[in-house]
Image (cartoon, rainbow, N blue to C red):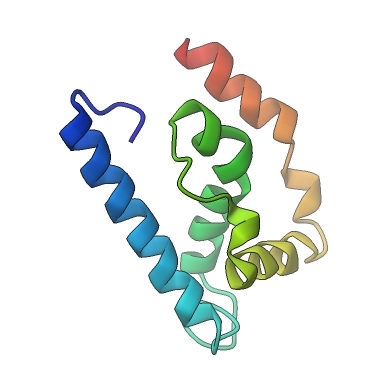
Length: 105
């Protein structure tokens, strides 16, 4: 979204992003994780995107249609994974933000 070279490209990227988030939100309404009842690599990959969504993507890349907290299933999923022992220690939001805001601009 944030690197789109035209309004049309931006609109398409934003619509695709939020359509996908809507699909995942629906899926997590009846499934604990992406691929069933066990945490998989797919969940880890999604987690790394979700943990950055509100502090970085929403602001920096102008993905502002909704905040993650407006998706109850996605937000609960993020919180659940974050609370797995050892996960929170790997999430330094300040470092994540510095990595995007200071490196890209």
